[in-house]
Length: 209
Image (cartoon, rainbow, N blue to C red; front, side, top):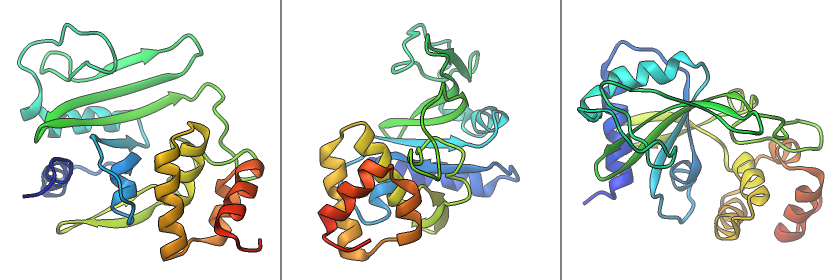
């Protein structure tokens, strides 16, 4: 029996690819890591869309999974899309702003997000490192397979930077192991990692720059 995250992602892909809707979207987070060879157990499925209207488009496609009545829990971590309120907008005190939709599909959360204002989170090709939610993921996406579908995801080289920033050591170690075992894009790793994290990476893989 498929793991629930695979079932959930496959269901989203089935609905999307059978529709005539065209959305610029990309798989992020641990599900994308596993589909690139990492050993992790995703607890949800996270999708980013390039344009804000993409959230509403996904909400229409996945309307069958929406709650029948408005979700009273206003916590962004617990809120679920409903037919009355399919999309949730939130701005934090830092100015960080996102628009999201979320459903429970095959027993776990599937979330679609557009980030309107990243509030200064470092995202650079020249020293600060590339952010998994930033502007450069779209031109550096990597295609992966889930069942019969081919979908874009954020490469492990960029995911490594985000997980190092967040000090998620188990994920960092899994990504490093995968990059060591299966290879990595040297040009991308040099762009994706901050100067400090790049030094750490090369010390871990024990290879010259």
